[in-house]
Amino acid sequence: MAGPTLRGLEVLVTGATGFVGSAFVRHAVREGAHVTILARASADLWRLAPVEGAYARLTGALQSLESAPLDSSRLDVVVHCAAAGVDQTFDDVDELVATNVHGTLAALKLALARRAGRFVLLGSSGEYGPGVGLTEDAPLRPTSEYGATRASATLLARAFGARRGLDVTVVRPFAVYGPHEAAYRLVPYAICQGLKGEPIRISSGAQTRDYLFVEDVADGIGRACVQPGAAGQVINLCSGRETAVRDIASMIAQRTGGRSAVAAGARGEIPGEMWRTSGDPAKARELLDWSARTSLADGLARTIDWFRREGAALRHYADVAS
Image 1: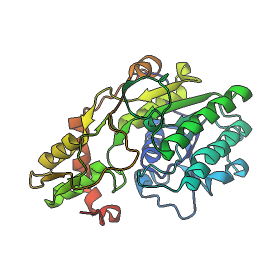
Image 2 (image 1 turned 120 degrees about the vertical axis):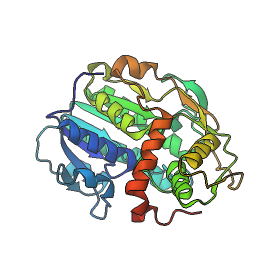
Image 3 (image 1 turned 135 degrees about the vertical axis):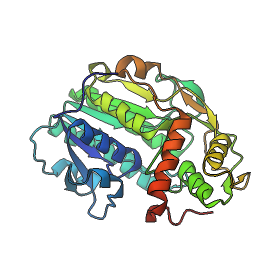
Image 4 (image 1 turned 90 degrees about the vertical axis):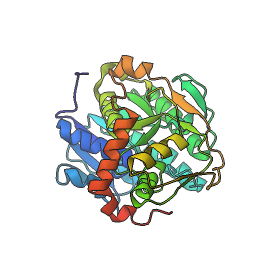
């Protein structure tokens, strides 16, 4: 999978302290990019500790981007990862619109003003709504306000770019997991419970997801920044395989010592939750020379190892609800 890299490029990343955004920052630093992150003064940079000192920082809110001073007069790439509502229980619609739509517009204006060579928008499989083997031309039928605002951001960004000559590329990851994921998410929750030998309480667990290891996603975003064929495209980052939530929970229970029972039905379903989701990875293979290289078994093993080494000791996982 050799090809163009990020080496030497000027890259600005929004949402850089989040799960996927921070993984991309670590990836870009390793590839030799000159990375600048946007983060509020109060931001917790714990996910960026492995690359501390290797990136520049702009302090401010997303909406302050247009007037933000930058060391470079021109940006090669803006990677827009900032988003609200990844937690499915988050229902502040005003904040969803403010961050996911208005925040995207602020990032687009910054990219245009700084003559960025490409604007890469981190989208979401939630833009599609439920479906199996979803291709990039599938209708957008989100089942939540989160998905609707992410779809709105995609439509806005592509129209903005087309009218103004800004190269906008959208990548849509499916169900991302791995080290540094937020504690309330299924995989870290189940791992923490498994390591403690406590029950892993889930809903029915019949929902299926197309799971991707976070480092594979970071690599896909990096390729979307530099591959010529990605210009102006919408590209899924997915494996094409469905796995049930209850099966993920069972795999984690077994791999963390086998002392935890999976309590299916112990939690209620989330309103608007998608039941079956998977994507078609063909376009990513064709345009990015990318595929999900890490198997689910290997990715879970690497994530569990990380929790055993350092994750479980971090305060961010101290209050995982039982």
